[in-house]
Picture 1 (tube, rainbow, N blue to C red):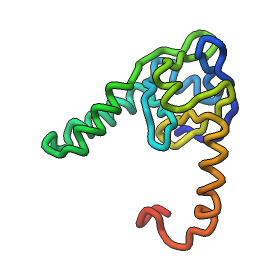
Picture 2 (cartoon, rainbow, N blue to C red):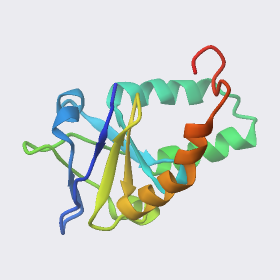
Picture 3 (cartoon, one colour):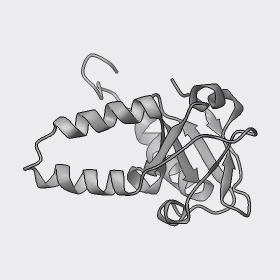
Picture 4 (cartoon, rainbow, N blue to C red):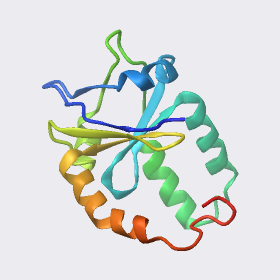
Length: 143
């Protein structure tokens, strides 16, 4: 499980230090791809394989499944972090997520999300009050 909020910076080569707390879970490999709201998703290779299997079992005749899968897999890049815990974020993914030097990395349960810090602050500003005011279950039986 990935938890917490961190503030690493992209270096001039487009590399990002993974938070130290996450490095052991991702040491064997990871997959970075496009996520919703213009962030990047980072999955362990095992979790990415589970997601891929779930998408594979979805009906290929559904246009939304085809559309989602195309974007999700075409953007994906698999990597192994270097000795310092850095990963390279390809230019196409940096552009999609509008990443600048200042990034915010959040733990999001089974994945990590990489956000441009200004985008994360804007997202949080728009959604945090609704979260605080939530008066009924979001997911029945869970919260």
